[in-house]
Image (cartoon, rainbow, N blue to C red; front, side, top):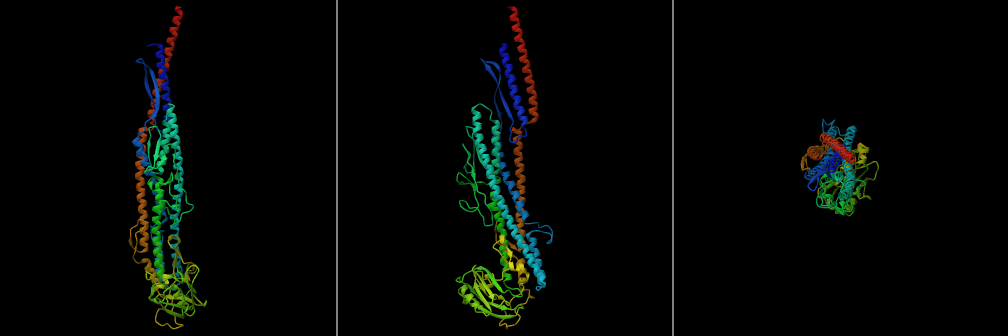
Length: 589
């Protein structure tokens, strides 16, 4: 072997060692860099004419297990969904309050209903007590406020989910742009013979960000491009990034909903003009969509059934009675017109009484003789001391023509409409609560302002009462007992919002609602723990397979430094041999 070849071999070894030291140093410095994979300098022997001429570095590569990485991507999407689910269900569960402890200490709707039951039970003992009437109204208002606040809280969660969807879409779009840009950089580097490992790591990190937000599929093309798709094949990245589109709602209410293809309502997620909302079933984004459009509306529907059923039975009971003294005006809650058909049978008594509850005038009306609401209005106008009309809002109004007197109704045998309601109940003339769901459930405003208007008396329905006779007395228990029975009697609640049909009191149904959410929250927490464990195992496996082992890299650098020193010494020795050879030649001449 010539000295020139020997020196060439030594120099190549020196340069190869230097490159490998640089690679290992970079590995150590990036050990904590997110997504970084260990890089390896590939060294090969060089030959010429069958003889070794040294070594060279052919490339710097990283070794990532493709199947393991695909599993990590899938686990990342599942963990993203599990985390969002448990977060939102915990917040939903908190809205319902705590059932721990006795009636006085529990904060749930079931506890508030129990407090109302207690207040009404106390009133039944002394129905004329102003303080006990006020206590019932206050307890009912507490329940109404809790229903409204819980409903508002559910809608705030939906609004939060909607805003989070918009944030996720922005993050996804940024990552899709990053992937598309890195695709270009990787191809350019490869074409120039430069290492691409670090760029590929950055691209994989961006892909994991997308996967955390939504379920995706991907593959690496023969040209080195990473192509990303939705599960059904809508392109997210090919030669360019295809960005998601979403419009956050300015406000979210109980009536707000998402309908695929609709031009109004809550927004869906689309790409390339195609609505892909239904395709996004995992990741943080998938869970947020499910919360906004399914889970939280289901909770609202359960709460609405509780509120609407409660309003119906409380109003049915309160419409059996009146306050003492009777109110000067009764205004209904049912919308009608003079031409509305009146499908009614039986008899109703409508009377006017003075402040002490003594009869001033009355009439028993045969409802089967009236074809329309206008006919009923005309008949009431025929009763001395009373005036009836339909106001601008389409509500039946009955007023005493003398301000010192009031109006009272005994539904008697009246049966109106398909549900055969008493006349007062059908028109809502003595309703105790108002609202069309939990969001606006409220104690009737005048009763809330003056608990003395709470209906505790009933109009005497005996035959031919004499003018001046006592027809209203606050000492009766008919209405109060009916209110208590309305709360505590067992009734059937229809299946809604994923909660099956059930039979029980309102407190029982409220407990079922709370238990249903608690069960979902428990399952979500369990799923989150499971998905976290699975994700951590894939992360650990990736780290073991392609992460940086500091001990190995440190040992490698020590070995490479020895190689570098040996190559340097070899070069020095060869140089000395060259010098000796030159000196010998010069001396010979």
